Length: 567
Image (tube, rainbow, N blue to C red; front, side, top):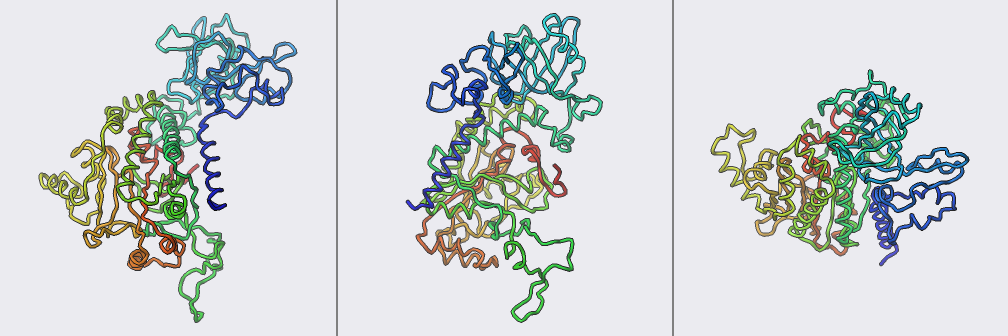
């Protein structure tokens, strides 16, 4: 193995190790901090691997209260320091998702959802983001100090608080609650100006408050499911022996050949008259800008895909994948398009189209199963408020093989259905060469087969230049596939890549793509070319599919689309 390949493998292992810890804690306890970083036997993991963050703060077997001396204990933000004479009592912080009944006095930190004050006690519902339900904190006035009573009078929805007490079995509807001994307001929230003071808001309104909307049930649940999906994707590929590669965001190549790319430049566009102008060999102005004077000495863009870069490593390391942001300057205001989005893009050497379909099916089943196991509370919420059949549909994904049919077969089914009543369709004309619309894709997945559906062997003219021509039909179609899923339509698009340099160069010429811009891509076909395949999964579309959220702008923290780049 070459030195470069070794570095890449080590880099992948490091990144995988970092990611696989998820929300694990790399912080020692305050007492260990005081002891020079040596953990006590009560907090040391019994396994060589690190315990997860949630298990560390929710279930570790340390003594009830660790007492330490000195200011360093205040640096441990997962604990609470309370004065106790000359010492400080360090209370373990517990998150709602990991709470279990215990006689240990612990710390709960989060944001107030509701406050109910009665004659002898107060009920404060606190959500710390770890779960949908949060946790109820009961504060009996006879058991708390005067300072806590004064704090209760200041409470309002949105306040950040720190509450100490014991987690006990609840006498009410909820399973657990905190029998609280003190409360401290960390950050006040004036109710008269707080935009989320009301209980219900439309998703459209919440998009104008992208900085605050994670505090709502829907967007917080989306974020947790999204995080679980991302972790499952990495685990699937890592456990399958794929190498994680980070491809560049700035590129001079148009992967899709569609020209819908954001330009990257350091030229001062506010001083148009001073822009360097391009000239031909005879010094005559050509009417364009001379990009040799720009930062990269050539036109540069934000990438629409990491695929081309991924192919370079697949042709050396075998199986690789990328997972990162991509950009498309498509002037679309639909509920399924973003200008900035994330793509999961595996590339497999010595693989054909069937290999890509098999991998995509295995991957989707794996990540959906992981979410079903780990995000039941959030999925139940989405099932109740957004899609009554969501959980049943996801269970079917895991348990049922995907349908596979050719593009020609799909067109036949559509023509037969549309002929029954063309007026029901926005795009009733469907024939060989038609780029299937969302309504066509969703009918195939939702109505015709009620399943995830692979459609393969698409017409050459509607697919990208890098897809391999089919030999059996004289190049009329290419070895391409799309995975269609109920509720979304296209979720995955992939192909076997064209590995024959003469065929590839001819296709580039047809699309007026300059071979000089792709010299390195063509080199892969010159030197040890191999059959290879891959696909791209739109991550935000996956989030929509798994949560039942209809608008992709609610599946990402800060949506970017035409006319909007707020936050």
